[in-house]
Length: 314
Image (cartoon, rainbow, N blue to C red; front, side, top):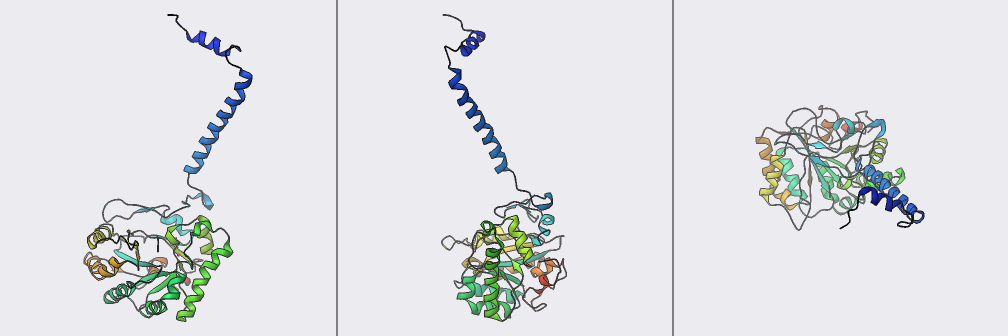
């Protein structure tokens, strides 16, 4: 058997009788270019985008990372980064305070049991409503206001707001909700905004701030929105008790049958753990808001008066 050495193979490779280099070189150049372009594109997609001032903010869905029981989670962006846009997801400090929020996409009979439980516990909440909810359940919206709760903006049509880049379209989604709320209640809508499904962009946060809104994400939520697959009471308590933490902004859905059934017991359990409930105005104003219902106007005026340039799935 004849032995083939590397140097012999190399000589054969460069021999024009073995490879037609005039034809091969363009192909090799093309493949090399595509390789390096592919690496560059992959690197670009894997990096978070830069917000103004060099701070990093994710540009897609709001997400959380949880540590140990009772510990605050981390978000896509830090509380300090979000503050630059008048945006929040969790209270500061270690005071055992809970900020209750509900996303209201439509009414199916579960909002009033939630309101009943809140009233029993004298617990303030913020309800983020869409246009359909205002159109179809005006009496419930009026009750929210009468009970002293805050009503915020969840956009009129519940679109993916991260795909809206022009301010005019963004503003219309917000203003149409505010106008219908004023028509239904005679009150001004709170300048609080929650992006539908938690989808946002840095530009969205800027536009919301320019319009005078504070943006609110959340630090605790669970899968409660699917009507065909509602969590059991045990599953709900496991998530909501195990992950509760000081300063929690809790996102629940008013459409959840489970939430309507467990709300009274859930609030009792949280109270037994030493927690109290405060409105989002307390978070915006840095802890100066009043906790009990009836202590404010119920329309979120705390955010409008703060002078900061003012915000999953329902």
